[in-house]
Every structure is written in structure tokens, then in C-alpha cells.
Length: 195
Image 1: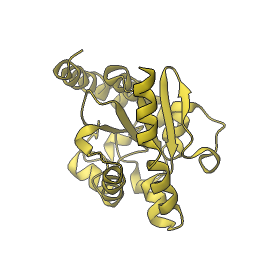
Image 2 (image 1 turned 135 degrees about the vertical axis):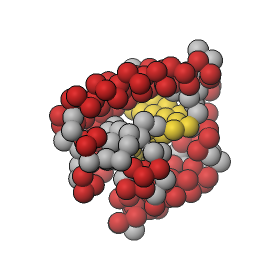
Image 3 (image 1 turned 45 degrees about the horizontal axis):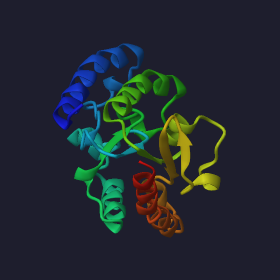
Image 4 (image 1 turned 90 degrees about the vertical axis):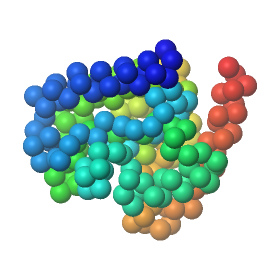
């Protein structure tokens, strides 16, 4: 598919999935709007977070609050911009009081995120935090043990990383997150050589 066809397919997917998740989950009742995702529909890299925060809920775009500023800095540190990638979350509506997503909510929203990945078809998926790591790799991994270590699954490279919010609350994680991001250009080069 061309970039334009992927953009249209993502729009159609949102139109199809929004009513489905609204029937399966009540999260939309406490949210201002859905936050489907944003960025290049033909990206080689997709970044997946957990769920929209307060600013994301207000603006309808992922990672536009404080975590988003850190994410922009992290991307800039390896020569990438938001326009180069696609950013989404496991959950598309903000959970009340910024609580963790519940298993039933993750199950309700999973087909939407999987549909986005199927359309965009990235080579690399960067997961930010435990919930997106579990979505991509399955349960049983510890982010503290495998952060920054690329894994192959279903023809893609999955790179589990700490969530920027965790690095903001725990300053000792910030240099780890930057060091893990610094590995991404090497992963991109490896994929180009293989391809």
C-alpha cells in the first residue's frame, strides 16, 4: 500500500473500531476523546505507549505532555523526528485518574492496535513500558531485565524500553533510556543489511 492508502486504511480502522470498543469498555465515558495514534502511516518504526494522559486526552494526540517532550528529545538524540515514526497506545481512551489499564480494557482495544500494526507494517516496534511490552511479547518478561534488548517476533524487531514517564519520576532511569535509544540506529542498520 502507498502512504496515502495506509492513511485512509487507518482512518477506516478508527471508524470501525471506535464503536466496537465503546461497546466493550466504558473508558470513553470519562475521556474527552479517543487518541487513536499519530504520525507517518508508512513508518518503519512504531512506538507504542500505554494509554493517553491528561494532555493527550485534551489534544487527541499521543505523547504531547511532559512524557512527549522527553520522547521528542530521545528521538532527536538519534536523529529522528515525530514525523518519521508512528506513535500509538495500547489503550485509546484515558483511564480515569491515570490508573493502569485493566486486562478487559486491554483486550477490548487490542484489535485496534493490532490493526494499526497490520496496516503500517513497521520493521521495528518500540514498546514504552510494561503494558505495550506485554502486548507485543506476551507476559512473562520483566522490563528491568530486557529493556534495550531487541527481540524478534512475527517478522518484526521489538525493542522494549522504559516509559518516559518512569524516567521522569525516577531520575536514574533517564540515562538508561537515552542509552537504550542510542541502540536503535544500529538496529535500523542491521535491518537494512538484512533487507
